Amino acid sequence: MIDKTTLVANWKMNPPSLKEAKKLYAATKKAAVGARGVRVVVAPPAVFLSPLAKGRRGRNAAFAVQNAHFEKSGAHTGEISYAQAKDTGVAYAIIGHAERRAAGEMNDDVRKKVAAALTSGVVPIICIGEKERSDSGEYFGVVKEQLHSAYTNVPQKRIASTLVAYEPVWAIGAEEAMKPNDMQEMVIFIRKCIAEMYAPAQVSTFPMILYGGAIDAGNARDMLAQGDIGGFLVGRSSTNIKKVTALFNALR
Ligand code: PGA
Image (cartoon, rainbow, N blue to C red):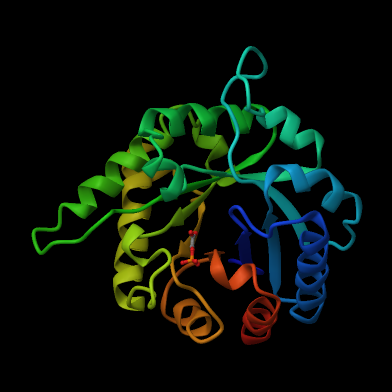
């Protein structure tokens, strides 16, 4: 039974300054206070994590790192580790986002990052989703492969310490989200894949599944009502004060 709706606010490379990040975070927290049934996970650019986490208060807000390296430390100029992210107050990690995959991240990198996040005590939010759909349905195979790879090093007892964010790439940044029915079909498929991986009889806990791609105040309620999901991974509607406030209001 899912007690609260989880809203992951993926700020991506926004906003442009710490001052604006603080304003956006304050507005997000304020909106979250009014929506008791929502748990918010804010994923700001990594350089803003420490200053924002200092002002963290309230049970309903947590932080996520948008990306990190799978090694613990070493000669990796420009990278940060999951342990370092955790040290700034991060509880979650977005892993394998479509924009990182488009920049060259492979299923195998995702596998290593999921394992590294778990080792560092950070909950992975594993992003999967097909680039396109055709009638022949090969997108199911794409999703299955992404899942199989991501969970290769996750022991059964840690499944519940992971989240899956299903984000069809064609819906990210698009005008419209996918149809709730199609989303639900994929949610069932994702559960089936995970059950197969871990031998069905023993799977007692599945990961929470989030949906991402063009979620806003206008469609969030319907998606939640018509699909068996725990919440959303949100881009654009999380980086604009008006939109984020409206989104929380729609979910309260
Ligand atoms: P969007 O992005 O909400 O702006 O479509 C979603 C995402 O990239 O996760």
